[in-house]
Image 1 (tube, rainbow, N blue to C red):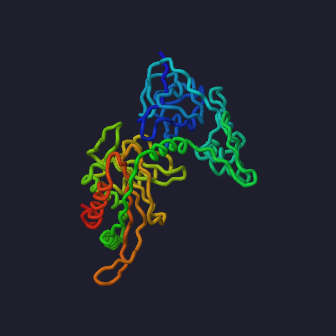
Image 2 (tube, rainbow, N blue to C red):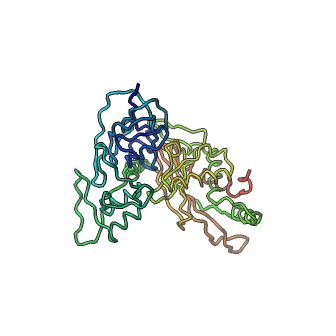
Image 3 (cartoon, one colour):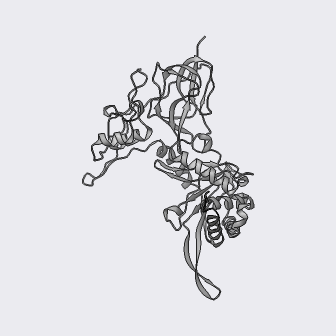
Length: 406
């Protein structure tokens, strides 16, 4: 006997997923869906995630249209079929009385509940269409099965970007008519990130900066490159920094912690978040148990996560449970910067570019490589002395670069 399987939005609330935006349904009402196959794409603050069908059957109902932002536990749709399984992002449940989620129907997204053929477009194409004011239903897609891609939208825009109208029910603020401009509607990433960063700004934060000599690490990497000229790769400066950070945090556990409603939670493992710049915003995937990984393992983990982040393919588990964050703008040529604490974590480390500076040494001036590190901390959990001690431990670890290979 057929039964109803609910497609429910679930996840770990708090870090990056108190709400999510439904980006795209991969099937329409009446279509046959298969358990374990991608059914709907959602966006939270830091990633686009494909929710798999929790059961095989017919998509009976879509309760949340593409473009709608809804809280956790919202029922997104209903499958009429047999059995259930699936991903953490979607859960099967017995039939229950669940109020329909409020629907938002942007102009570029036709209603799936009518059973009409849906407009197939990539999430990036939909975002560019909103920015340029392009009606997706009028665009011819060049992708597989006619799926609309970013290039198709830009081609249809005919060159110049236009200012799209504000969504229904949202009054746009006045803009200066004499100044050329365009209006950008925030995507799910930006909408979800905004309250997260506002919460960060409310934290009483302190910062501590230290320029750390990198002679030992620079020399080690030169030797490794010379030894591997016939093949293989050499871990990056970032990889070594992550290894040194994970070890230094064990010396200063108050920075591998969080403020939890009047309590301080000190973590016994380092789940290292690493900020990655992508086309859709800053993403912070997490390397769990970083203190137990070698430099090579950290390098492989970061490469894999960064690649998925840039393709917006990270899942919720790869963004959850971070205990400390590293943000490195050195590759962009930034000498020094201050990063905002990433709540609920207690601290974040900003890493600048390696540069050569004059150093007085042995009665003469010599050029030596340094990196400036700035630690931002939650003053409810730690103090400036904790931050200074951590940077001192980090300097000692990086000064003995060969030991980082152990």
